[in-house]
Image (cartoon, rainbow, N blue to C red; front, side, top):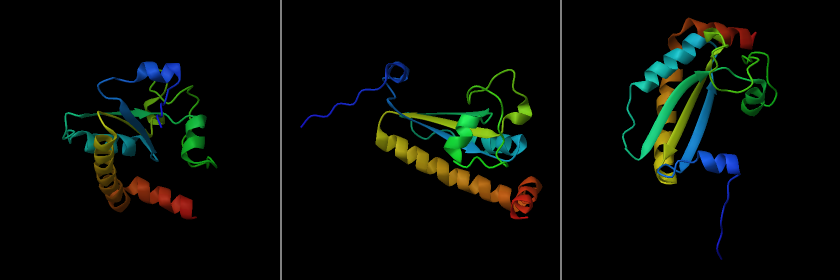
Length: 145
């Protein structure tokens, strides 16, 4: 039995033939300062394999993204009026509270290994923020009240 998968034309045109496997990870954070800190902490570690490419950016969370991240779209999620999740010159810096990480790899295995490492590092970054950052502590108190 032979299976073939085709992508919609717009998605197929965007696939890099050298790095056909890709994943975008969206992580909303309470403030721009925390999102920027996470980006800087994760950016210093270079990707270990030349078979994987990774890019980071800070973006604003749109209403569509909020639904995807949290179906109930709670009031504590920052939502901007931007038309897409990409950075626009019109958005204020403080609205960019979402860490967007894009991975591209030559194989699904390489993608999985790299993303596992990313989540281990992200867990450490979030743990440090939770333990040491006053903004996170204040946000937790508001949510628990």
